[in-house]
Length: 420
Image (cartoon, rainbow, N blue to C red; front, side):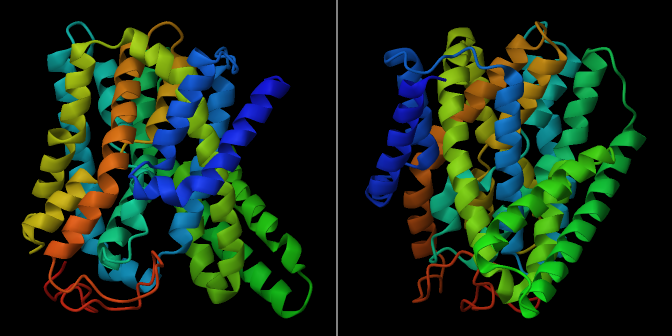
């Protein structure tokens, strides 16, 4: 990337900083703007080279996702997490597998000659959600905290759960073979490593702050490094790094308490910048290739993946929870596909050179459609949902994780009361 490309990218980031609130009111999310900017720089102005190696895109997306997972998890209170454990178990233990199965069967039926393993790759890679693509929902104080927390925790854990399935599909289609036991072991290692890294790191920073050892100016970068320690250390132990990053954020937020809020804000800001760059690279590198290889079947799959394939399993998983139909539909629709799906597609390109073209194209088209559909619908649908649910509208700070503030009739302190 030459000086002109660097200057152009920096100018776009600066311009977003100047106009982000105004563009947000126009329902233009950051992913929409930066995917379009990347496409313009690469195809329209020819400022950015499109021959970026997949390893570089994968590294950028992985680091971004790790920081996003850690920051989001650190805002989740463990008390509220335990209260809704049954709902998380339903979404992750029932809804997610059903989504994978439905996505796989749809790919087998729609794409002749694709094969089972590439179809499983598509179904598993597009099952994880990305709450960041519905940022207007996650930061709107009118939407009940409990609903936002459900979406956040689900998106934080489902990519880690889907990773073994994706790797099994890639391994079965390629040369290497990994057993189910190895995949489960990777999840277990990720859970343990994340708890240890987050708890030990949070305790160490709290003690250092109390004794005056830690400089406030460098505490934020220290937590950034702790996040990468949890992720890379877990990979070194052959564990699931994404699960470790999310669990480390949960543990850190619980241990560091209010003393760690400034550091978490620093991580959030850094992750936000990295997310902008990731979507710009996606627009410049992936979108032209995806659009060139897409056809009507890819578009049909993308539409069904974002609607029926996601929303029906969520509805089935939540049967018997007494959640209102409107809330179930809201949770089902806001299952955007984002960074995790992009990473899985890049991994497939690395591991299966020349083979997974159709599968990667389907994944790319679905992510691109999700960026547009969920980005444009997040703010208006959040407002309509909040207006129709009794007791949602209430004065309060615009903080996404003020879970200790109950909303009348919507945020019960006990899991056995009438839920959202």
